[in-house]
Length: 298
Image 1 (cartoon, rainbow, N blue to C red):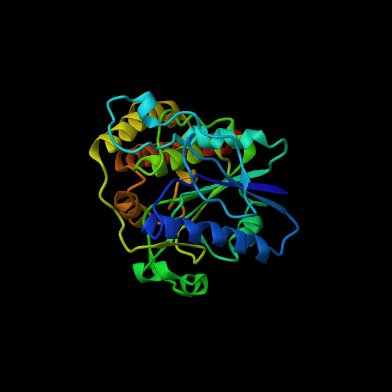
Image 2 (cartoon, rainbow, N blue to C red):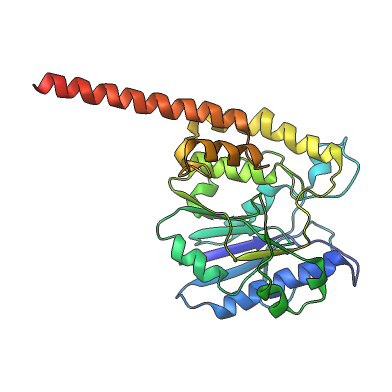
């Protein structure tokens, strides 16, 4: 079993929040790899934007650089140089043999048991989505043991994605950039459409983010860029393959499922009603057919 865990570090000034957060992220990945109990190969990989100067600790493979960023595809944007998620994922193809791919943001610390947990689950699931825990910003100074020990608070979105290599061939993330809302929605809806048995791990102690914020302030033009990419290009293409059973909360009772969908920022309530209707209609047709065959057999 070969798992590639790919991340995208970015330049940050010495002593800044971003610099320390990225350091903990990469150190935690190295520690989780050392902790590994399963017999598996874990390749820790980075890809960076061309021209970015970032410090990479020993133990990471550096893949080829990213040659474009979101402002190249949308010149109206005037802020940060943010990579496109599809370009990052495409770098995995530089490996000859890969079984599963993991993508996490640069502010996600993985716990020591992370890779073993993933390996336990991917025997039954071709995709796993894991929610982070939020911990107090005072943990920024470390050490890692302190970050690990704080169970923290739950988080409603999705920011860790594990999926079988074959699913990557069905991914068409268009011009979605990282670090902006609708990245999570694009991942979640792709996996709900193309995976056979996705698993959603909502509230376990597997990953942490330093900081208690849920919806940080964002630059509106970047938000609308990702939003338009999702609703104009991605959602129309995928929606024919959506099935309620492959989305989060599918196992919950109707009203609880409705509430969870309505509150989760990565999901959309209009999709829920459409899928619920589809599911009920399918169940009704199955019921009618069953009774038809029973009557004919008498």
